[in-house]
Length: 417
Ligand code: ADP
Ligand code: MG
Image 1 (cartoon, rainbow, N blue to C red):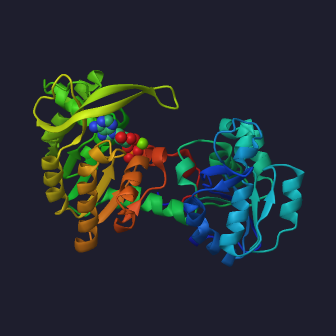
Image 2: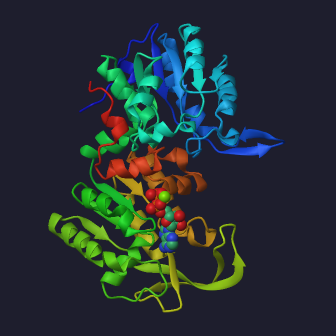
Image 3: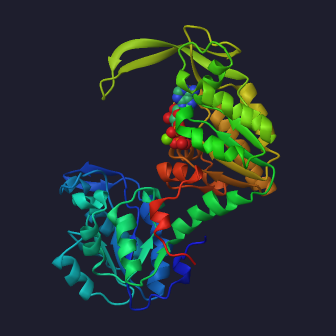
């Protein structure tokens, strides 16, 4: 069922509780916390501006980091209020708590189109517990609820779910913001009846992370292209040697079941034909987390078995070219999970080749390309192709759950159209 969005709302003179994703990276400089990347703040501006034009009074709530129910100055949203005010070109009132008298006083002073940002909602333990009394306290100052934080919608917390329920119970409306609306459109509606051929690229580290997504997409896709470390579990299931590669032997059955299902449904299911491997060498050093640091010797491409001393780090070039060829004929593409350990340039070529193919077919043939998954988005941005695809999801874990077909609590809590 389609959800109500901010476009449908008439909020003149009304107080709008607006849950946003302001979980921005901060760094300490000369004793002050400085925002190092304001992308998430900028991304909310269309929703804010629309609601301001409509004459709403905006009460913004967000979390930052994991303060675990305690006040922690390094996780304050105060720098965000400063930045937001700059971006909006108008004052943003910051309140150093998210419930209580201070909030009520600030809200009472608001005029239509005003913006208030409340302090980190996770300073209170009750937020993550979705405590009903806390949700009532949050909801006290508002008559409308809007959620624009898709990345937090898979959590049933007070600000993502509880408040909406309180507002709805009073007869108030609960709507999706413009960012949330786009996520639901591209990860949801567009994939319900995709233009065909519909090609799905699935990579990443583990089969176990993606079982449900594979299973669901097998029922929708024409072609599934497998990459990343999860390919080695398929290899293992076929009785091939995987050397020191990351595998999940307990999921051999899962891999074989997926292939059998593909065959039954007539889905073209492709596995890498070549692999870039290296021999890991312990440097004797440890990283910040105390884990041993490895170097990679003898980087080479193999087909078939992976030698005992070697570990697979990416699909090979033959695979990448083959996948690119298939992608060039697609009308809809969903990509979740990189094809290799792209963070290291020596293992990024296959991911980059596929990224370029996805960008090309989007730009030249008008294909729709949808990227879900935090690391996939990072890979696209690293290849400077982020603006050449149709849509990149902002919700890492949330997008994965949504693609699995799960009902996200933060979405379910919104009013139906
Ligand atoms: P996403 O966040 O897009 O859903 P995942 O979190 O599932 O993607 O997987 C991304 C991670 O998988 C990356 O950090 C990448 O380094 C790792 N990865 C991909 N292929 C391999 C491989 N062959 N060997 C080791 N790690 C890999
Ligand atoms: Mg990830």
